[in-house]
Amino acid sequence: MGISALQTRLQATLPMARIEPVALPGCEHISLALINADFPTGPLPGDVMHQVLANPAYWCLCWGSGAALAQLLLQEPQWVQGKSVVDLGSGSGIAGIAAALAGASSVLACDTDPDARLASATNAELNGVDIQISATLPQRCDIVLMADVLYDKQNLPLLGLAQQHASEVLVADTRITVLPDPDYRELTTINALTFPNLGEFDEFTTAHIFHWQARLPRISATQPIEDDV
Image (tube, rainbow, N blue to C red; front, side, top):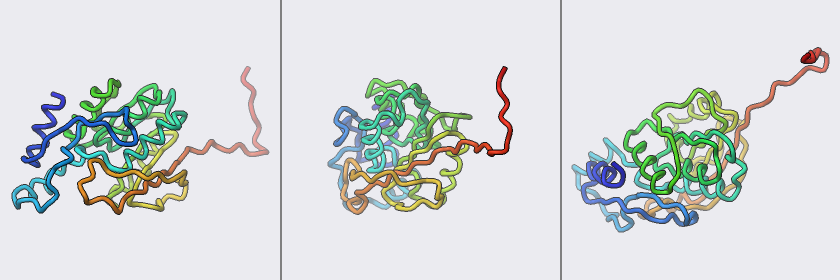
């Protein structure tokens, strides 16, 4: 398994591509197995384009939102320190890896794409961190991370799904500046490029970071409070 298996998976979609372990700019102590930076950016042959549309290898890039969220977690580890973390739509696994390096008590990389799950596992091993891999969400966790999963509006229900499984949610996205759920508040913006930058993503350089936290139930002023005895 590992990098050689990722190479096989990638070449099923892009036969002229290769996987290379590289240090991630902005998170230099994180390395990821990604598509080669000198991959040609010209038009793809028709048969290859059909493969890309049928089985897009999103996991072979570190998208800007993932890099931005990783930077936030490494600079402000209190977001995940000592917490159970789920990286939802993990792709390359960058957010989950950063959470593990920042001191999370446990990390689960969750993705419906088996190739992405392999990429997350491979990159976790590459960085010497222990991450569980799953196609489904656990019943409960402390915090869900979502980086660059809202590129399709059909994925917006994931915002509500994450709330059902966690006490907190952190969302990073370069394509959406306002979330439809007003309970998500914007924390900050972070400039980060997709890596390797193959020339298509320069317009998406600013990741918006949003936070949701479950509200504690309110106790009415007239509601009696029973003491534990």
